[in-house]
Image (cartoon, rainbow, N blue to C red):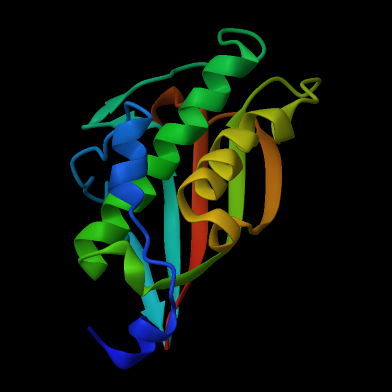
Length: 164
């Protein structure tokens, strides 16, 4: 194992934790346009926004607070996180190269009067902390939007710091 990885005494068993929660990583999604799902600059990975598709199918469609409950939105946010993790695993090989989740931006498909956007994006935040502990604590922005691709309920993007 690389010396810098050895210096980080906490070995991440993200997939083991997911399995203990009855969760699994979806198939690695493919971009739906002319862009990269991630772009590494130095030891920082910038990840594109991804919706709540699971194995290519949008799991939660519609406006949270109107068509979907806050709990369903929360679950949709968790699915976006699983997609990000699938992309990271495919790119990195494992999760032990991750030093920290830096920032999340969450977008919730909702009516203009919906004020519980942060409760929905907690699905992403909670899952990252469950999986990565302190390395999963991140800065965040949660925004309500008029629509998302495919009428998805939630989309998130992510910035990840790698061990340098």
